[in-house]
Image (cartoon, rainbow, N blue to C red; front, side):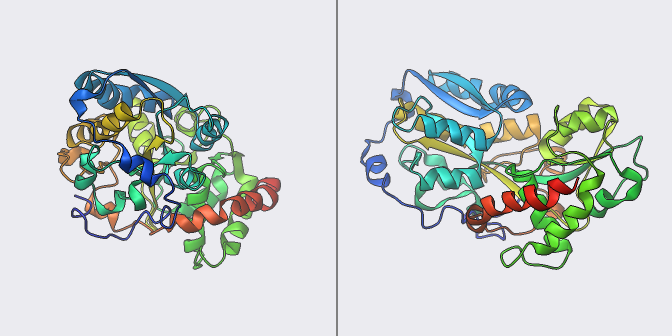
Length: 361
């Protein structure tokens, strides 16, 4: 598997270190509630579309049945949009559990939109890999994924092996990117910066310059529909995307969509599962989070949609494991990221993309 239980690895979710623990007292003061005692319903906000369909099948429905609760799935188009919705509800929360990427969740923790979990209730915290744990018992990782290069197998031959294929003149006007604030754009910035020999914690000038060169070749920075469909249909030749969705679409496309982890490496994408501060049904919410982090739910979702499990006891087939971010060969290619730094510079990076990259397209 990816990492031994509780052993520190290259990718550590440090984005949440040093965050205010003002909600900790309230959370820990809550009496530990056995799963069998929970009742009622909760509202879960998470990604829409294929993620919703597969997560409902593999996790939501089985956990709801096991706990005897109702789970209402509220679609979120992106982590940033979900954060904005939670901000509007801060004084009167309507959501109990929110699933979003770690960089956005860190902002939510800082703004006290989320509260720590009770380890006496969310007992599966003990079974998570070290790089899934966050400080202060705030929402941990619930899935691991990584950035990949996707391509149309009929338009791109032979299969690309490097991120540099994005800059290949023969694909001008056929490149699809997703710009910041989406985390894909942030991840591509880090990868490009490293390719240019620079440390993203010091400067991203080399990445911005290189991406500005790419901009005139880009078909869209805001793919509608998503890039997987655009590339599969042949409107685009190359795109940046997430491995889990790419693997799913590749199977559905009968091979028209190719997926590759470039030789320069990639970045883990981490989705976290978070307890909303003031959740209407916090007891059932924590019981659901515990179930979603369990070995069985983690294995089911990996088998369904190729997200790497965060629970060290999840049993996933070798075939599935090889197509996730868990295989040893892929782990060695991952670029460590300090998400605390990304959280601090995210707005600045977005501004630079708008002014120096997208305007050059």
